[in-house]
Image 1 (cartoon, helix red, strand yellow):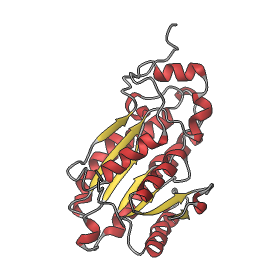
Image 2: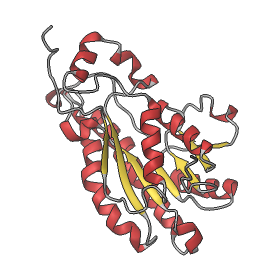
Image 3: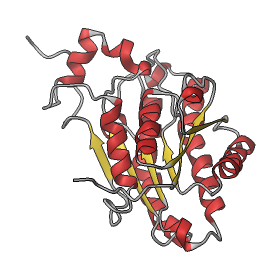
Image 4: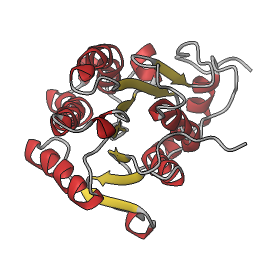
Length: 265
């Protein structure tokens, strides 16, 4: 049985599309027949070589570049962005307790992860104003949160703070505001635990880190980028999730909390 997601020819913009989750999400939407704009910041990686993707570079902390991103996407795809996947983000590898964290470190993470998300969402909403019903009927936003936003994360309070803000502050606010522009517009969040991405792979290889990560996870495995991408596609689908908004979906294997020390053998 074939399943129509209702996303054929829908214009989808994915931020941070050159990373593990972003790239897989872009491929997933491409397979569903969407018009996919793949945003990247510094490294395009192999996006240019993937048929059907339109890669566009932009610094998400720059108002001007974000506005240009949406204008370029509209010009190249022939219609405004209808679905926004806010996937970009940084997770500084070097650990810092809050007592030892510099203001510069804190601000940099918030500038990229939180302010960058705000600028993308604001530009997205603005370019939808006055659009016809056929465009507005497919409008959706999905942000990529994290278990860090739910449980916190020792040594990475900056990252946890940005994700909690997206999941529990911005999401419920935006789901009430987006309908003022797009009456059927929906906003949800997909929140992974550890995912086997290039950014996290080296850290996950550490036996102690992996043991702590899986100590409270019933499924006892690290997610793959496709696990996250498919949930994003389901939530963006007006057919499968047309009455779902304001929801945080945890893609974490059932994780119940943090284990600060490796479990006993």
